[in-house]
Length: 404
Ligand SMILES: Nc1ncnc2c1ncn2[C@@H]1O[C@H](COP(=O)(O)OP(=O)(O)OP(=O)(O)O)[C@@H](O)[C@H]1O
Ligand SMILES: [Mg+2]
Picture 1 (cartoon, protein in one colour):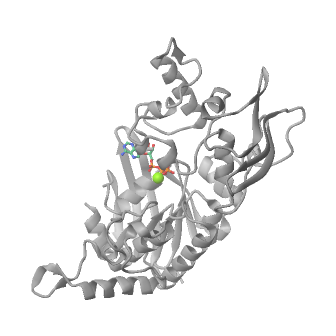
Picture 2 (cartoon, rainbow, N blue to C red):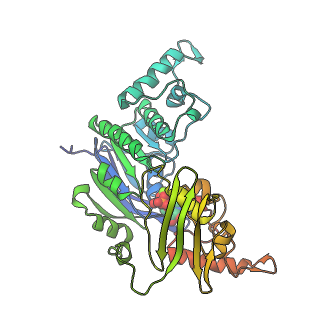
């Protein structure tokens, strides 16, 4: 029963950073009680769109309609007042404050006639009410720094509810959650949907979109390329819409091409209590998946292969033109042409305030060092080539990584 008037409608939004449009003529409608997925590759414009919907950015062109009435969202407060809240990937909470304070922060109940005295009883009651709506048990008096990521996520959602949110935007909410936590979060989101709250859900995990979303809008290069009920969008169609290409053959697993040789050999690798006697082989041109639940040792295995963590037992060897070489540590791994893209790229892999160029050059590319000096031009060329090959979207190699 889709009501005639959407809760929020976006018409012809355009947003440029400099000359480059990040969004072009974007239109979409979000119904009450709908989980609307927004999908797209890196740089497609998802975050820019969400920033506009939450008043963090203003559009250059286009209109926003709330329950059919044109509105302007000059700032985050205006969006919140209307009933639009955002839950970020890393919830923006104050770690030293309690759960109850975080839920109510910015909207604290005050004692009658004493504007500077917080009414503690009312505060706890309001926070509890928000958590009760979600039907989740998070200890009210715990400091946020003491609770886990999954619970922080719930606190952020409870906070949105306390602010009267009727549309909640979730940007990659599951990236640090275990499978069980994802299931619990989804159960909460479904209950919210059942109560008429609209949700906009951004994730790179297509199976998640399928599990939770009623409809999906796909952005590519700042434009809407598809909007459809999730059930009418096959996985292949979704990937094709996102990438603009048919499902690449290299995404389909198959036996390694004949005549290819192993380039990485891992034998009997053990590390701490999590990794026990792992052996595997990776051939030229091959993509090897490492599957397992959260905590099963996937990341540890990779870190041990890369030499980033001490190994207790086992061998790791890389083949080059000169034959097989043992990988003993990170420096050796890099020298042999190995790279590691860690799970949490913000925390482990990238310097967000530095440029794309400097981040690519963090590990000196081969040929860029001469007599102990870095050759700026060589690094720049390597960076440009890498950006083209990986289709990294940025204004240039000088763009700070946090703008990607
Ligand atoms: N503050 C900014 N200044 C300049 N360019 C920006 C800024 N924010 C985003 N862009 C550019 O706008 C485009 C869209 O970026 P956006 O962050 O919205 O993409 P996204 O879909 O959220 O990507 P991701 O999946 O990586 O989060 C990109 O080309 C990006 O480089
Ligand atoms: Mg983004």
